[in-house]
Image (tube, rainbow over all chains, first blue to last red; front, side, top):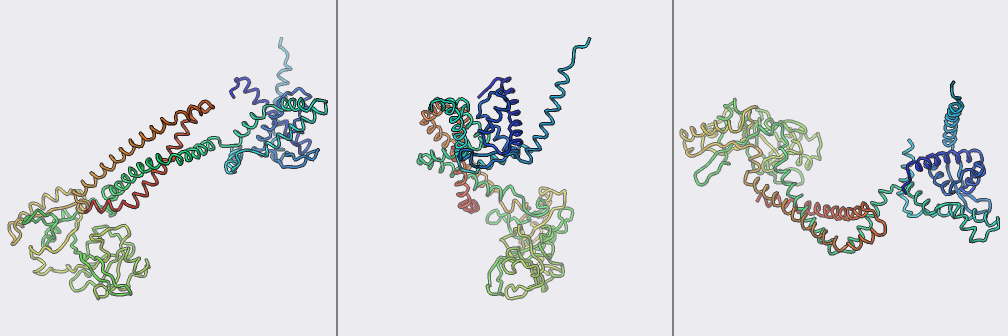
Length: 119
Length: 432
């Protein structure tokens, strides 16, 4: 399972942002199961994000291990048994922190990119 | 902080015996089912829908592997696996296992037993303060055969006491059996009669109470007794109020004035001490040079070596032998306390035994190594198959290490059991 260095970094960044997106999704839309989360992210990213849906589960496990989301079994739309994930209080705090970080970083980058060449 | 949560996750997973994760399988299956239905609604055939769903989901096996790696202490799991497999293999090959275990048990048992003896007898110092300065003066008799452990006369003790620049203190004592005649169980035990300097030479090793005073050592006085720790526990249950109570020795009540510590050892394993009655002015009988009825123990002055003191004693003894009646051919020998307890003959025997035990251990190791090697040769095919299936070198090595570890642990345990059970016999044989 060895990847190239650049690819590794990219997939790590992707995993990190995926975690964030899942947290936000759960925060906004309430408890969802894995399929539901994948669909919403697909919608939100307007099909720009092409990832294997299975990776969602890796993120979900990581979020669970950190205590940011919790899970319990329930019934899905078609009355099938499904595992629903919901955000926890810790998760909400983490979301707030991360959002602030993003805003700050993207603000800085935006300002840097708007600099025009000096005469 | 973050690392801890992950740790508890993995720990919980370790304790649960489930090898698979059926719940996760169910979750994935449900997800795939939903994807399939989506595609079917779009008009695909069931088979096409299934492949499309799988393609969109991604590699299921890889996902499960990644998840497994995230939720287990892989290292511990592997070790446990290897141990279980190793145990199974060893049980199947009972012939090899028995021989290997016996070899190990013998080697380890012998070495352990003899080493315990060596440690107790040779390495551990005596439990007294200033044990290095304690010496045992004895008379040398040469009439029938050479004996340097003869009893001493009181006049000799007086001479040593007067040599104050060599000896801190010299104490007279004697040993014998006594009967404890009170209480429900009269018993016969070993006892010592000692003077007022005896216990101070040993650093006053008292749990409670004290030793004898000069007044208590006067002839005719001396109705006091000091008990050993064991006797105190046996007859008085370790009660501090035993001090001042009476114990009847040979029909005569004595007042208990002290109890000595648990780790102290005394000549003949004596359990009770009474005053010897050598206090005051010695009478003519006591002063006879040929009355060798006493034992003595002395403490050297700090800075005086045994050889120095011995040199003086040899000269002084020669003078006594020349001038006193019935003392021709006698001399004085100064033993160190440690050397007196373990005479050099016994010491050498023990060391020889230790060497032998180490050799036995060496032979056992060599035997075991060849056994394991032979067994390894018959397993080459198993290794080849495992390697072909993808086992990495470390894992293969780990497997064999686990088996060896199991053998060693079992063999070691058996060896220690042997040593505990039969070890004391080794000591008795050596002493005899």
